[in-house]
Amino acid sequence: MKLICIGDSLTYGYGLKRDKVWTNVLEKKLKAEVINKGVSGDTSAGMLARLHNDVVLNNPTHAMIMGGTNDLVWGMDTKQVISNLATMAFQLMQNCIMPVFGLSVPVCTELARKNWGFMSDFSEMNKNLGTLNDSIVKFSKNYNIQVIDFYSAFIGKNGEGQEKYYADGLHLNVDGNIKMADMAFNAGIMKF
Image (spheres, rainbow, N blue to C red):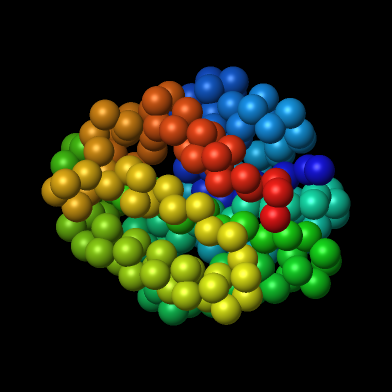
């Protein structure tokens, strides 16, 4: 079995040493090949454009799709984002690759404003991520696609990301990456 994870900087493990990134931690736990195809700053359209080369041509048994946050940072409509993500899932299924969706983690707003305030107003981000994630869950139920809900696991009582897991408000620290790896492992990602 082989898992390829395609996504943005959350998949890539922005700012971390490679051995601390959740995909590498997961690979050790699964004792199976896990390939990280995260690209920092990527959008769902970029992921769709590189799906064939980065995933399909590498012949995995499973592929995790996790993206959409950057689309929302730049103000893209959630309907277009879900369309891109759904198209990716369909292309994977057509190539006999089992798709899995990972729901992107929430934003830790104050920390994000401090570190990334030049990019966006983060006040609506978690609401928009919630809407996007709801759409992913509904789509996945219709096609029997596994979903790993990283979003709910990282949200705090205030409706934002729990600061203890974040490096800069958008990206997770080592503890956050370990939590993601544990969640993916406990979800039985390679059993479906």
